[in-house]
Amino acid sequence: MSDPLIELRDIEKHFGSVIALAGVSLTVFPGECHCLLGDNGAGKSTFIKTMSGVHKPTKGTIHMGGKEVNFTSARDAIEAGIATVYQDLAMIPLMSVTRNFWMGREPKKKVGPFSFMDFDKANSVTMEEMARMGINLREPDQAVGTLSGGERQTVAIARAVHFGAKVLILDEPTSALGVRQTSNVLATIDKVRKKGIGVVFISHNVRHAMAVGDRFTVLNRGQTLGTAKRGEISPEELQELMAGGQELAELEGSLGGTV
Ligand SMILES: Nc1ncnc2c1ncn2[C@@H]1O[C@H](COP(=O)(O)OP(=O)(O)OP(=O)(O)O)[C@@H](O)[C@H]1O
Ligand SMILES: [Mg+2]
Image (cartoon, rainbow, N blue to C red; front, side, top):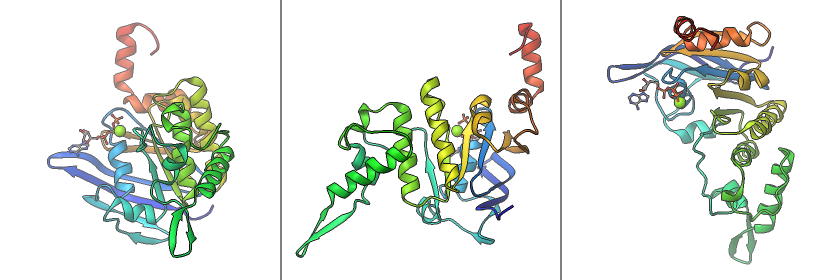
C-alpha cells in the first residue's frame, strides 16, 4: 500500500469545557474514499475543520508526506492540497457557472500593457471540467442558481480537482439531494477517487457511504469507534455503531420493530 496523503493522530479539540474531539485518528490514502460517519454532534464537522486548517487542534498532530504540518489558516491547508466542499457551498447563485468555478483565479490574457480576464479560456476549461465529471452544461454563462443541487456540488468538486486537490473533503454532500442527484454525486466521487485523490466523505446515511466507501470511520461523542474496510462490516453494523448501539436497540424495543 502507498503512503497516506494525510495522517491525523490523536486529535483533540476542546471548546472551553466542551470536548468536541477526544483523540481521533484517521488516515487518507491516495484514491480511497474514506467515509466519516456519526450522529449529530459526534464531532464530524469539527474534525474536518481541524483537517482543513479552520480549527487548530488542542492536542494531536497532522502529518503529510511523512512530515508534521501546522496549518494556521484554511489557506495553508488549501495550499497543501486539502480542499473542502461545505454543504452550504460558497457560491453566488446569480453569477455564471464559469465565474463560480474560477472565483478570483480567472485566467488572464495580455493585450499590450493591459491584462484582461480570458473569458474564452475560462469558459472552455469550465465546460471541459464539468463534462469530465459527467455534466454537460448548456452554456458556461448559465447562472449557478439555475443548476440542480447535485450539479452545484459537481461545480464545487470539479473546481477543487482543477486546482490540484490531493485530499477532497465533502461535508454531507448528499444530505439535501433526491435519489437521482445523489447517485450523480456518488458517481462523481468515484471519478475523483480514480484520479488518485483521497476523498473524505461525511455522511449520516449508511447506504450512501456503503455505495462508494473503501473505509469507514465512525465517530461517537468525539471518539473514534474504529475504522473498518469495505466488506468487513455490514450496513446494519455500521448503522448500529453510529446510533451508539444501545440507544437504537431501546428505540427498536419501544417501537416494536426494526428501525
Ligand atoms: N465553535 C464551537 N464552540 C463550542 N462548541 C462547539 C463548536 N463547534 C462545535 N461545538 C460542539 O462540538 C460538538 C461536535 O459538533 P460538530 O459540529 O463537530 O458535530 P457533527 O458531527 O458535525 O454534527 P452534525 O451531524 O449535526 O453536523 C457539539 O457538541 C458541538 O456543540
Ligand atoms: Mg456537521
